[in-house]
Length: 266
Image (cartoon, rainbow, N blue to C red; front, side):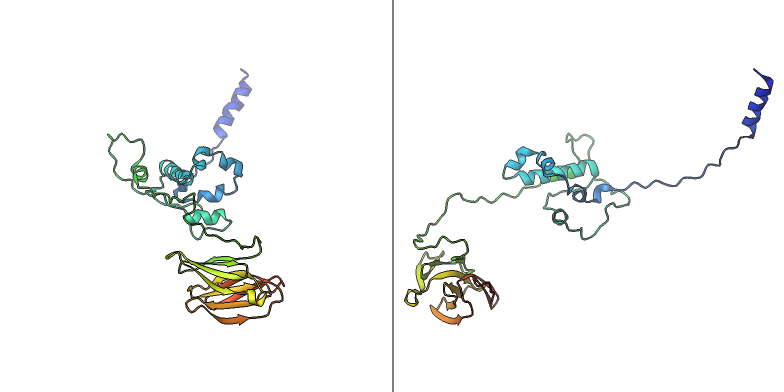
């Protein structure tokens, strides 16, 4: 080796200085157990969402199975500590485009102490997940596929813009048939005729019960609104102002609103 090159190499080794090492602080890792994962997954395409558990979603309990499965995954991977699979109202608001009410995306803090678990346990899941899977499930309400009562309505008009059927808070059904309004009580199965507009040359186009169930409003083809007292079978008020049929009625307390084909709401 060249002696001059060797001297230069040794001089570079002796003269080179190293930068002093700076002390490094702690590295904080966020705890994702309190994160709202629905916020990040809200914009996943529908095709990707339908590909997850397709068989479970075809059944009546598909949504509940998916919710329990999601809670189980959070317990095992994120340590969420969920013991009861309830409907996440916060996630519903986020999925509808609303911001969560409180809480940051990530939470920093010390981990919660885990419950003592026997090393001889044969369960492959944690204690929280074991409680989650052992919690009783609410039975789904069964809806009958056949009607329990069929009423004859021979003169019921087949018009989308008419509202001829309304159910009261006292379990009484009102039906507008032609020029008459009939009431059917679900408790006694008794049918009564409330009014008949054939003498006036008019017909019923809408019916609506008051919130307390003691008054019923009747809209007519000539643009009139009649208010009837059901207990007394007597007309208590006659409202005018429309020039066409009244097809929509709505109560708000003691305030009655009517919508007509003349494009007016009174």
